[in-house]
Length: 283
Image 1 (cartoon, helix red, strand yellow):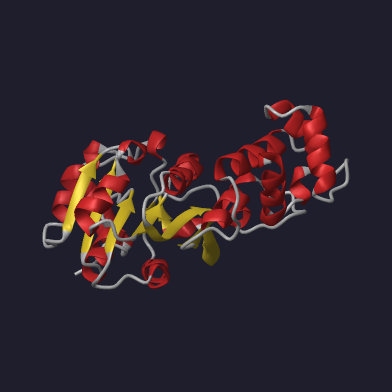
Image 2: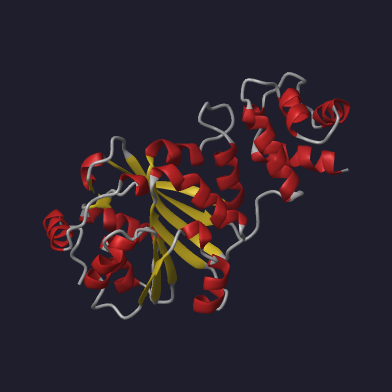
């Protein structure tokens, strides 16, 4: 039975194994059962699901996932947590722990082997310093995904669902919305973790699109997005002129053909706007 969301048990397990937190891994373990319930509920885990958990820590969420899912693979980078996980997960027969950096794991191959290539669900309490690279790797590697339910820094979760015109809106917002529909589940105060982080967190679920909401050259689309947000204060025309292989004249013509002002900035464009620009430049 899952029990680790109780801080008393968490402390006992850590002390029993002489574990010390490592700053380089951004370790903050969840100790609030109500938040854990919300994560499991939002991820909509069923007995038919294969779940990939990134960063299981001492197994707090892993225990619950094992009780709800068909099978769980937990990827943990810190080898000193392996004996802890062996202890806390000893009663569960449907879990595999992999000691590896998630960015080096062939998740596509894992999905093929464990779930016959069918879409998987990802659940994670991500270290803040590596949130964006992990999310982008999951999306850009085209792993078959049904959903990603993650705990991230509140500001990052807010950024993921922002629209044009906001100062928080940027390349991450557009990438997340191209691949999924983001929905913030709840805000999580620092007191729900051990040790307490300095900032608030949010649980956000990204329900992956069966096909993107826009049709265009995907590679060019993201080249345009990155170039336009690399230097936010520049106009779209100047940003794209410096960041892409098109001439200034080609970019100027494309912006005009798309119906945009010559002085417009990238932060004013929606995903559909960038797709229209990608279509024009593809020609």
